[in-house]
Image (cartoon, rainbow, N blue to C red; front, side):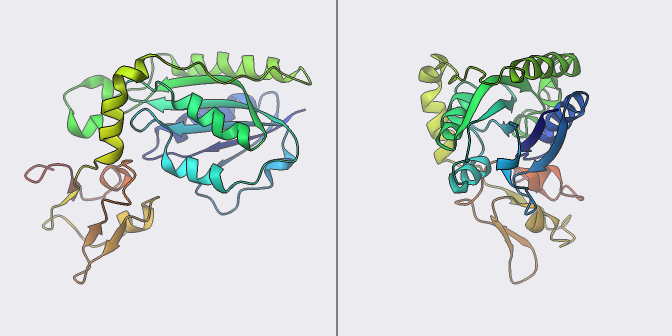
Length: 247
């Protein structure tokens, strides 16, 4: 029985949900552990036969938290095959390609890659009238089941063929939008009349971009913000927003 580690970063929960669905399916054939890369208890990756690596797509690229985790990860002692996936609101373009290249540096080889549409953390805030920004792919459970079956079949080969996902030509057209998204961060507004100073946003921010000001209200450092908007989606009082006059 193969021993598989599912590693993921999730901003507000979509990528975590997919990781859980993948884990549930793989448990039918394998021994599986699942961890967020934010966890301080991640076991020794060298002890696993294969990996699943998942990230949300932010501006057509993997999340900074995932890339920072991989940058700090020492190369594995043996080549380890991986199932790479991303979650995206609209299009992921070269997200998996970028991730696969970074994994390759760590002796982790991509043998299957997929993209799943999920609720868009920014889209659902900026355009709440667009229904698809709140939805997962239709029949996502069925798709994940099929993808995991393919992954298990590939792992039956002692040396599954690795590859780097193809370059997406659409990324050329999207380049200005990607550059703008990575350089510009939307200002996060605080509605003080709703804030209860619970510090949930401070404790939960994966980028350590929020601190308390002298009055105990959250203060966001836009230079550190990773655009996941976990603070807004998980605020118990809806005290944070991208619009100054509207929650």
